[in-house]
Image 1 (cartoon, rainbow, N blue to C red):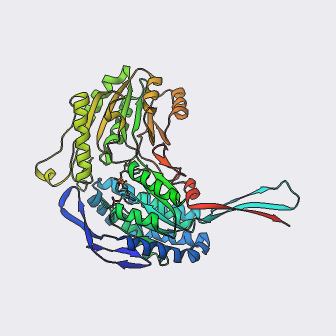
Image 2: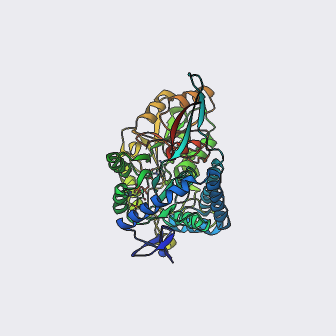
Length: 478
Ligand code: NAP
């Protein structure tokens, strides 16, 4: 089936590229139109033309459209989730969780339409009334990755629209269908033409066109540090508003006083589910000496029970890598791990033979005795590869955990409340969990990292409104 681009309320065709199933590469999930720079320009112009009317619409009326989008997605829930598994590889329960989250995100921001508050404060002067109101930014470009192909476009598009902005969505080429379904729902909900536009195609070509598009006022990007850095440089030349959410090298600190079974469950979940392809995935377990050996043994035993396979099949825990490029990256880091610290305790191979031969499957892999200076302890893999590092004590664990340039998420496993607070105040990461996996966040709180993981205002929760709106300050003498 052909999935066209969507510009100014029309489906626009052209040359195509294939979206293939990473669990069975003989299956083409869909053909997508390879957008050109001129499509981005047309989409940005359409968004600019739609902006005055959309931004003047009362915010609760914009919210009514967003509720409709959520209802439409809800009606297609099972089909959309199944398509996500086929295009991205995550298991069907994971895909269902993600589609449910997109629906919830649309409902949450639809509700914000009735709460889009500014604020009013007393003046020092007599009979002066002063207040600040929110105004939208204008046309925004939304550039999204493949790993949460529905939720990330949803958590950018819904707050953008409720604040009164118009948008150009550029999805990841490896998994554009889930974002396409969101845009289709916007179309079916009757959102006026030009308010939402969708252009698939190569990031290199379209990214340049996006930052060059005259009407563009802001870009929200989620993806790799390299592309984020490039976009930042381009955007700052034009003083575009910019929001960047990028990579992570997320630690789970396991302390000697933890509930070990829980710590193992949480670490396996965070390191391996979704094939380790979550920006908040744990890729370093930093373990206090007294429980180090027991933790590794229990991790190996638990990991042996994980079932890798096609995520559409019942009972599968881990799907494939998203594409050949990500598989190659996983295998390259596994080789680096072998050279730096010897054979892995478990895993370490591509799975081949039978049905595995048609997909990009890799074993969940654990390296032990990784030291903080090794590559596996410092660079993001974005695959099911866990580095276990020994720490002398809590302070040593915190020092190791903070000694990387990235700071997205972090977790501690402990029953000591003092350690919890030391972790909360001392950990250099934007998202913290305690006795939970480092991954698995909800949409009602701010989302984003610190250090080189992120730049600009946070996403999700009420904080999202601060990127997609600006304050206009009013002083009134009466
Ligand atoms: P990516 O290669 O940076 O791609 C992200 C998006 O940017 C895609 O739509 C891509 O298009 C596009 N792109 C590529 N080159 C571009 C350019 N020059 N200008 C503008 N856009 C360009 O990242 P990815 O491989 O999809 O995702 C994995 C990375 O995302 C990991 O590092 C992960 O940690 C990070 N991530 C972060 C978060 C977070 O919230 N912090 C969440 C999820 C993922 P094409 O697909 O066409 O190349």
